[in-house]
Image (cartoon, rainbow, N blue to C red; front, side, top):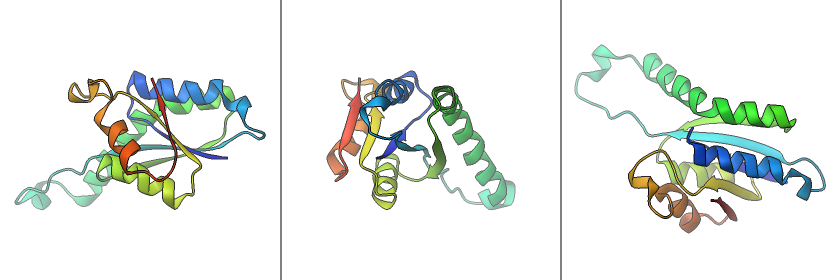
Length: 142
């Protein structure tokens, strides 16, 4: 079973990781886990290329992504669950769904609330959008 787990560094996304760990014995074999975080693109401003280089922006994305993934990686490592981790840049929900499709995932695990105040509605905006646009089954973790 191939499972994509979307995390943003919030406690809600870590609850999704913990849910996967708690239920890993549901599967005949340990699941193949793809851990992903998505960063919105930095807006392109006039003359931005003169002040900030492309490599600096890529390093920023990677550093921020690594920070968001760190706690989830520690949890999965401690549980002995193997995973690959990816940092993507783009529209969040669409990037999650596209990666799940590309990697032929069987399910997407996602927490119901994210880091933003707007996202702290009854169902987080990202989780809601993933649920609506994905053909891959989505497991919402409260």
